[in-house]
Image (cartoon, rainbow, N blue to C red):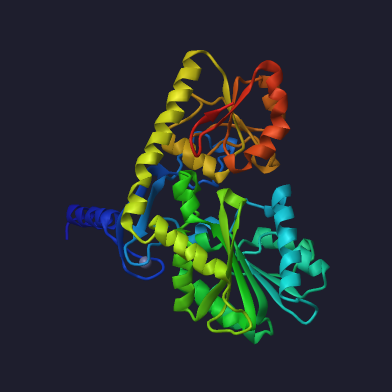
Amino acid sequence: MSALARLTEKVADEDDRATRDFPCRACGAVVRETVVDLGMSPLCESYVPPERQDAMEPFYPLHAFVCEQCYLVQLREYVSAEEIFTEYAYFSSFSDSWLQHAEEYAVMAARRFGLGSGSRVVELASNDGYLLQYFVRAGIPSLGVEPAANVARAAEERGVRTIVAFFGRDTGAQLRADGWAASLMIANNVLAQVPDLNDFVGGIQIALAEHGVVTVEFPHVVRTIEENQFDQIYHEHFSYFSLSTVALLFARHGLEVFDVEELPTHGGSLRVYGCHAGDAAHPVEPSVRALLDREERLGVRTLAYYHAFEESVRETKRRLLEFLIQARREGKRVVGYGAPGKGNTLLNFCGIRTDFIDFTVDRNPYKHGKLLPGSRIPIHAPEKLWEAKPDYVLILPWNLKDEIVKQLEGIRAWGGRFVVPIPTLRVW
Ligand SMILES: [Zn+2]
């Protein structure tokens, strides 16, 4: 074969890969229905250090699909989980409100399920031990499973025993063999990031003790859609769940949902409680049927429900750009607040760079001096905002807006105003 023919074949292969349908991460059916196409975007947690500001940066398609069989909303895996999560910059303990959420959970779970020194608590993607530390303090034997070695080290320093691994059936079997069959397994804000859902949930089934309980928390896709939270979509989140998709997934692995709660975290999350199917120790609460019925009425098991989303996403972009164009035409100064992953989806999809926003500020010192991926907007310490005295502060982590507005009330002194883009543009 000539070099040219080989090259042509290679290009054809790549073309093919770019357009071919792919199998559903949960049920294996062919996935081809678009929910929203957000264009090309870099990995949203890849903050650019200043020495790399003239270097290339990889962009990947940010395109959400829905499965016609099980209605799981999902991205194709363009970047492997190993690439994303083995050296991760996110340390849960940087957020006060998040720590409080963790402590409340630990107290609730220990009481509700009667956990004590004879119990075993296992957390999957245990991060820096921000949650397990509360179980350890209560004298309940606890073990973390965390793929990022740097983050796991921080957990060990906090006194939380942690093994460095991606969780699945093999790790589940290992835990059981080592005497860690779990009375309580915790998988909070990790399910979205799991590339092989069946291996992960299969592993939970293996490692869960008799009468054990698993709780999973994740942003509720119904809130994402109903409240136009398209910036929840980023490459690190492979899947977006309703209760009905999780119930199906659990059932496939001999697990059953017996309770569910709605939480305000991450713009609206679910906490789902599961056990071995048919475990009489955990009767199914009425909350489960009630939410499944509500989801059914909304239409989560119809394609039309997902197809309506894209137009409201585009309208949000038009409104935000309209506002920014007018503000800049009037010579107003706009800066950002926060540098969350979701902000990068928003800014890159809308094509907003330093032509609209001078800089953003963030409390996490790890990000100071770096640039936002893609948009290359500089990130400074919060003090910079008080020097610059901007006319508008665009709040990127809008889910924390009440807390942020309270901290920043002082901008009123020079006539500064707040802006949030989601669910609809609001200036006040
Ligand atoms: Zn499916």
